[in-house]
Image 1 (cartoon, rainbow, N blue to C red):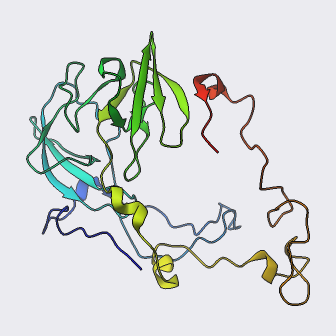
Image 2: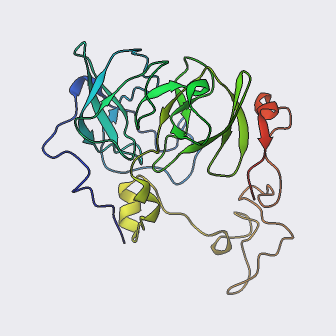
Length: 263
């Protein structure tokens, strides 16, 4: 088992802002009829959702980082920002962000870690995060711990971005993005280590298909340890799961993808 040390990163003795907290319902993978639609969910420790400002739409108003806090609902750390007009908001913390730093959302913002500006004003080669796909909608790409996207080119009204997966896609250049890499890049090194820790996260046990009966799974049955018994890997419901393309060929965003991710 391994954990990330928060001692030198998070601000000590700071309580979250009550007005920016809300309780999300725990459905344990069930729909409005009480039927399980997503397996292996349920339990977990109680937690409060932090309302994050993904839009950061306070244009040309200087903000100061008050604290770096832990968010139980996401892998990245969050930063508490107080703006010149006195309002406080939570944003995604970038890797180089520290208490006392000043950030701003502006068309002419300096190219400093944490600042937010339109992608057409960011030079090629810079790394960005919390990227909008349509103007004014708020950040949708590169929001998890350690994520960043590289700007490859500026092509008229589009900006070419290279994802960590290797995919290259076009995004409208008027959309906003934040400079830098998302915080807590060491999250990828965490080893859960024991079943109890998974239960604390709200993950229930997963049973192997080979341990089931033939009526319950295509891999089930047999004496002792048997092979799969089917030509292709399948889900519990007999759907092919390996080597089959799942992306809709008519998806609206297909024309925006210049190069598919590397397999």
